[in-house]
Length: 195
Image (cartoon, rainbow, N blue to C red; front, side, top):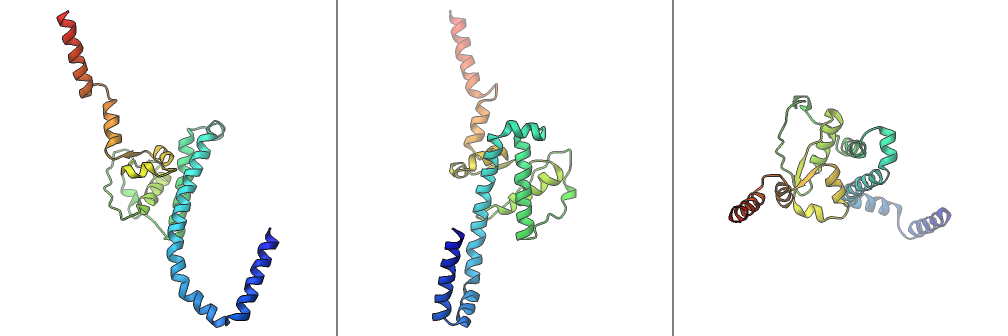
């Protein structure tokens, strides 16, 4: 297979060298490099997101073996591996670092209000950095479209991402003492008193 690819590459190279001037190819490469870099970054991010989902699926499927190997819950081990991958990507691609991370309280609750653009890539790096350095997971709230993307359900489950409105409503309806339970108790009590 590699010899076929090498032969195809060699044949294409011979055609290019024979018909196109070398200076033209250098100039064309220089001209198209910003376009290549522009499309390379989103491609790398999408590959990294699906690599995250793949790692989490592998950890979920082999959790018994991994629990014995690490001695903890498979989600914790998977979170740490994914955080290390994202932290390395942020450091290599952007030189990402968090200034003032030591000012985050260790034993008290903290609220981070975060504004992001189209892709919350900085938030992924920040969550990874805090998880690796402080061993604390930042719980996030996401829009409902995120849960409809393939592969995101396991990411949101492991990284404790709550759905904005529908998820929170369904969680509050399961809490003992909610309004629908109170109304049902009134109806049942009223029927018991009448009989």
